[in-house]
Image 1 (cartoon, rainbow, N blue to C red):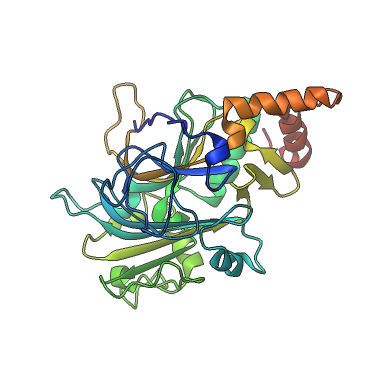
Image 2 (cartoon, rainbow, N blue to C red):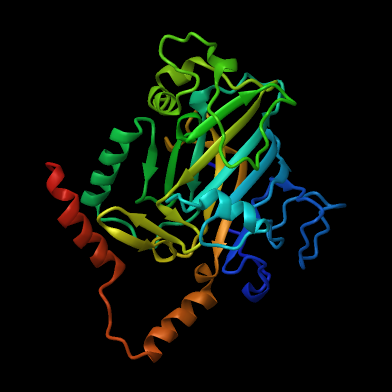
Length: 345
């Protein structure tokens, strides 16, 4: 199982360049930000291209990186957050309900192993500790049912000691392009046009190579069409992920009808990640799925830090506010009212 330690930033949050957010690379993801990005951290990326939990990465501009399985660059944008390219960020989010975007562009490395199938590479999160706010079992059942209807191949477990939410990268990305090296689009482009013709040809009976919605539907099941095609290390892949629900600038999950949920409490102080993983065809001795990271980045918020949580608690106490219902109470109330009637449990 891919289980990474949560490296809490040692840099005081008052020194975070994108406060209240801190963007960091996971161990094994080695970054070389552009030289016009200045950081107060100790690592000099010009001479030391490596992952460093104490080094804040830029937001809003491309970051080259390499791992054992992948080499390329990442672009991370937040609507409700600071950016190292504010004009580009403003253009991207203007007129859109999206609250975050991340683009991954690069090649899977040819390390002599069997080419990776589309059905083996997942995007999502695996947490090293239990969630701070676990849904009750009957709500967990509802969530799983909803998610599997929308994404047949989703792997979701919110109740164990190692929670996870994963979906195939090739069906999870809103837009995908596949290009020959040197012909790939600029990662800073505001819009990315779908084009998977290098993989599927121009007359595939099921896939329209310019239709992202059709691709996402047709390739969401790892036991279906996704199991018949491989990632090609000679091609450059551009994955464009975005949504209007998970606001990492505010660290809230904005659910239709149900409202906003504070993710710092839900996750028990653990950071969310931007990562891809390869699923091992063999399970461990306990029957659990095993994963290897393709790459990984974490997004911290100062409210995740113990000091931040304590300060928040003291502020509420000082204000003399009456005790509010717990997040768990709200969780139950929202789901019972809005979701449970839709299913026969």
